Every structure is written in C-alpha cells, then in structure tokens.
Amino acid sequence: MQGLIIALQFMTRIPLKINLNITEDEFGSSSKFFPLVGLIIGIILFFIIKLTQIILPPLVVGAIILISEIIITGGIHLDGYMDTMDGLFSARPKEQALEIMKDSRVGAHSVTALISLLILKYSIIVSLPANEVAILILFMPVVGRWFMLYCLSFFPYARNQGLGKIFWQQTKRKHWYISSLFILIMFLIFLPYIYLLALTITFLITLTPALLISKYLNGHTGDTYGALNEMAQVIFIFICLIISRI
Image (cartoon, rainbow, N blue to C red):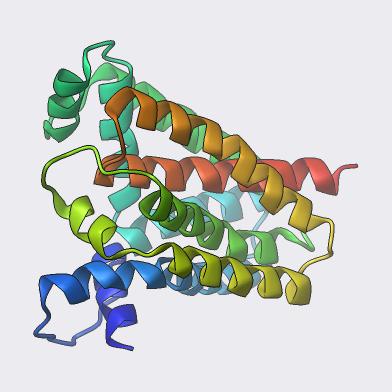
C-alpha cells in the first residue's frame, strides 16, 4: 500500500495528506504500481464522462476529459513529452540532446509536438462511440503507464544520474509481467475480446519509437518515459477507434 501511495503522490496531484518517511529504494520500487495509478486515473475519468455525458455534447465532454487528465496528473508526462521532442528534433549528438532535454525552457519543436498531440487526442476522444468511450478512456492511462513500466524493465538508462534512474534501478522485469497479466484479465472482463488486438498493436507501434529513442540516446530517461506514456495512450485510443468502426 505504501508503494501505491508513493506512486500516486509522484504521478498525480490527487490530494493525499500522508507523510511518509521513505528510502530511495522504496521510492524507486513504487514503479511497479504505475499501471495501478493509471487505473485510478482512468476510473476518475470514467465517472467524469458518465456524469458529463448526461447533459453535455461529445465535443464539450472531450475537452473536459482532456483538461481533467492534465489537472489530475499535473501534466507531468506532457512535460517529459515536450522535453523529449525538443531533444530528439534538435538533430544534435546524444550529449547535447540530453542537455537540451534538461533545459527548463521550451522550444518550437516541443510546442508544435504538444499542440499536435492534444489535437489528435481530443479528436479521437470525441469520435469514440458514445457507449464505449468511458470504458476505453478508463483503460487509456493504464496502457500508457504499462508501456512506461516496460521501458523501465527492458531498456538501459541513458544518464549517469536522474530521478528516472531511481525507478530504473528498482524495476524488475517480473513487475512488467505481473502487470501484463493484471491488464489482460481486466481487458477480458470489461471489454470485447477484439480490443486485446488494440493492446497488442499499441505495444508493437509504440515499441518502434522506444527502440529509436534508445538507439539515439543509448537508453531512456525520465522524460522519454513520460513521452512514451503519452504516445501509447494516443495510439491505443486511435486503434480502438479504428476497431470500433470496422
């Protein structure tokens, strides 16, 4: 339970007034709860959709969901996404790209990438079937953090130090396998079986930028974990949209 609280306090702005005396190892090992944090975020978004769908049109509901997710997470992963885009599109060597990603200032590449991501995400959300949008959005943050856990488990870390390295050092591959089983069971219980195809395709597509980033930077960082989380979420609901229209 302490690990889940640590993960929630780190990855969300949910007001948990709990003071914990934790070690660096305990902080890092909370990564195994990332998909569960995604589920909690998803449940909140699920009920927001159910409540707003009653009186508001889909275009407004979509905007509320997009803004709500940013408020819940504090935009922590969007920040990583923006930093990653600045670094990747700088066309600089690894060392300089990593320095650019550490810079608190935002560049044109990150702003363009953020706007593109949010436009795409919003357009997909408002296009999902009304009777399925809530449950699909519930799983969206789960899938993103599930893939983040995969990167922590299977890729090297690109920096000598950093907050992300604390998680990387304490994450075991068995954590990802256990979370995969948990998600598989959840999908089988709450979604038509065909949406397992969406999960598989999302993993395979998101694996491509994960491999390319790792090759470019010789590993991943806290920023790229956040970026891949955002990518996986959008890819997942995009594939779900295609499946729902077949």
